[in-house]
Image 1 (cartoon, rainbow, N blue to C red):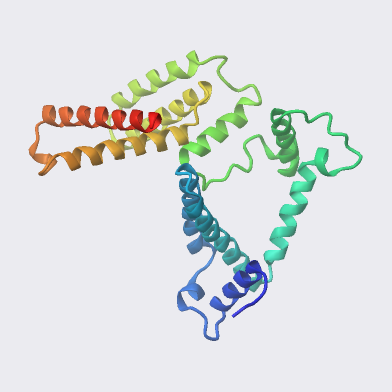
Image 2 (cartoon, one colour; image 1 turned 90 degrees about the horizontal axis):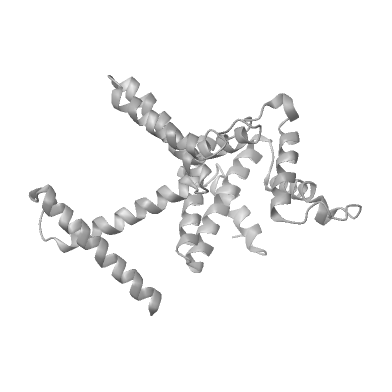
Length: 268
């Protein structure tokens, strides 16, 4: 077993797992594509630990995410593409390049007075890294992002060019228009397309009122989950046996009960 710094140990463990001579059969079968879903899952588990403010769990989940980085780097090293040191070197170089106001002695930092200034500077630098104007405004927005998150990012990029509604009335009216078109759809292909347009319009509306659509939907789903669990817990029997009116009554009771619990936790 490897000794020394824990990160060195982790790198050595990963190399041993991928060793054709006595390594782990499962690890040896993996490639970048098969591991990618696990990498995404671990990133979401990090976000979940943060949302729950669970520092012990966050430590463990960050370890799982770090393992994913080491896994990808090991597979790349086996191909002779790069290794974990190259990964670290690349991010070090990028961070220094993107923070000249911090790391460049010749830069007095006066142009970066706020976080907003930093975001604007980053966008200029990232555009240059993507290849400048020739690359296109929307170049480099990852296809693998969650759909709502990617829609937000695409819309923000487009808005920086002036391609945007002047106020919230435009995106709100667009929701009404797209809902009508969804209702009027006559087949599955049309419904698929129109519902996509409707969701994109809702994301646009959320952006205009300053709400992160991805986080809002996640929180709404968690809220539904809590309320549904309360309904299921409070009813001894199958919910399918209940009338719509009875289900609605149980739902309202669950909402009231959870609101009371939250109020008590805030005052305790």
